[in-house]
Length: 87
Image (tube, rainbow, N blue to C red):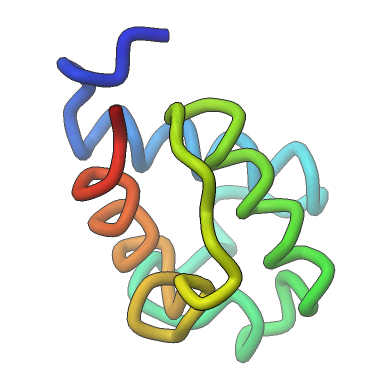
């Protein structure tokens, strides 16, 4: 996928589609401005799975020290993080 021209809206949709498939949740149940961990959608292993999805689909490796609440605290924060780091 050419991630140079992908929009934040497209990133959000790809990320939400993955979360729904991987964690068997409906989009309507995901509050995109809330923590997926705090809302019980994922656990710490889920965070690693999302990190792997990001690395595979947006052409950059997520470092362990980047897996913070500032970057992974919500779907919206993840979208911003991906948008800043995609290649």
